[in-house]
Amino acid sequence: MQPLDALTIKHLARELDVKLSGGKISKIHQSHFHDLFLHCWVGGQARHQKLYVSIKPELAFCTLLDNTAFLSFPKQPQNFCLLLRKRLQNGCIERVEALEAERVINLHISNVNAIGQTVAYVLSLELMGKHSNIILVDAATGLIDGCAHGVSSTMSQHREVAPGLAYTEPPKPTKRPLAALTQQEWMAALTAVGTDDAKTHAAFLAKTYAGFGQRILEQVFWVAPGPEAAHTLLHELMGGSHLAPCLGFGHVGDGIPQAFSLLDMTTAALLIPSALMWQRCPSVCAMVAGYFLPVYGNRQFQQVHQQLAQIVANQLAKLDKRLAELEASLETEAIETLRHKGDALTAMLYQSAEVRPGGQKTIEACHPQTGEVMTIALDAKLNLSDNAQRYYRLFKKAQRRAEKNRAFLTQVVYQREFAEAQNDALNRAETLDDLQFIRQDLKAMGWFEARRSGGSSKKAEAQPALLTVTSSDGFSLVVGKNHVQNDWLLGKVARGHDVWVHVQHMPGAHVVVRTNKQAVPDQTLLEAAELAAWFSKAQHSTQVPVIYTEVKHVRKIPDSYPGHVTYTHEQEIVVSPSDALLGAAGSA
Image 1 (tube, one colour):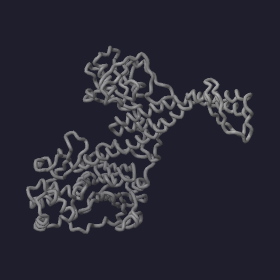
Image 2 (tube, helix red, strand yellow):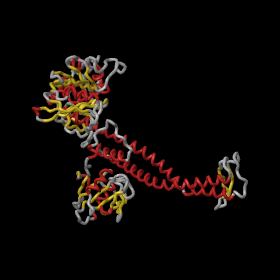
Image 3 (cartoon, rainbow, N blue to C red):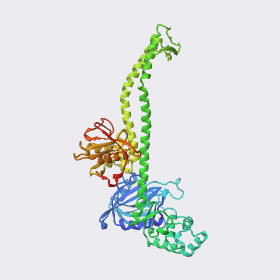
Image 4 (cartoon, one colour):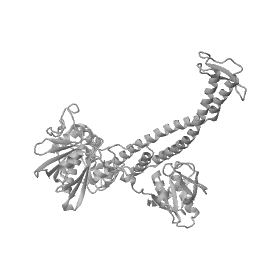
């Protein structure tokens, strides 16, 4: 993961200064202590600018956003968020600047307090890896008014960060700044390395001097025609010349970039010892957003996916254990054995002396049906007759428990089918929206408790976006890829004359062929079946049985989970899973 370096932050701050200066802060949100969202109205640009800041140790960045769909805000805001709203809401951003050779951006903000006085604040965004922080400073006193997270003397020997303390800038590096080297000193340092390798030069300079990361130095050496030209190019880049932000992808169409650069790497592709495909970005903000947001979204997806997968795995383990217990309690042979023991003891009443208190704990008797000798455990405090009655009571109790457990067994089987379907849905989930629907299913079953600070559920309650493709005959095929979508598809979208398609005896998507009361061609039915097999647990199989029937013959099972149905008048077709139609997919 390539972190933001001081030079990139310097140019990022320049862009933010142009786009945010004079803007009025209208909204302030935090989804967690490690991020911040500012909604600013900039009159001259006649539009809102949305500044997002992340101070996660592995993802410290800030940028302007166009799409904020990935953000979810809690109903109860963080305490620091409440403080920022009190101090900065409706305030004006005077200017944005970066500390020289530091990974810190300062937003200078003026506002009017409760008694009508103009007050000035500095919102310091420290994007320094594990030391990242957001700090609000009273510009008049220089005291810290609030921070995203405090730093005590036991956590850092360099400086403390807490409300009421004087704000001090991050400690300066003890190494000499690389930007201070003259060309002669630059060449002398490279000569001492003893090689012409650009990567070795960059690693040496980044380790020996302060101010630049190894990645940006490597890129400077790749683009510049020689070591002397690299010194000139670096200083010109610091001043803003040759600024051409780019993103490097592993291959064309890859959604997650692997590198970024302030230089135009597309024109120097033949000189770069890298397999990356470089694409130009319109601005530094766009470059930062293009690099960090996909990684942020991917990590968020992995975290939620792992959390939901663990919940489903735990429930499957519990259900398997419960299923084994219920099946054991329903074993007729074990229940009948209790009655047989009572019968055997009753038969012995006239053949053996009664067992008195303190007597024997076991007795051998003949099985009343097979005649085989069996050993029967006795309660030594009871006589032979009472022991027989005890076994008859246990037999009746086991019968009653079995009747009750038969109903429980049906529920557990339903729940296990649901858990298997959720496990399959997790394996096929591709976006956070897919996971949100799965989370909603788990909440409906009582398997997932939302955190108190959890985000709004508006997205989960909204109408789900169904996948729609067109068959080669022109029929619409609508796919529900999870239980919420399946429930919505059958309950709100499908009509009785439409055709319902599903893999047989296996978790998978519901596919509905919109017929408009027309006969469905065989080719369309085949394509719908292939699609149903593709979005199922049998995606990697070759011959998959798929059933189909009219929607009017499909019924939801009462008191079962969403999307769980029963059906009649079904027919079967065997297909190989295929996603050939997905290139023309849309939303219903």
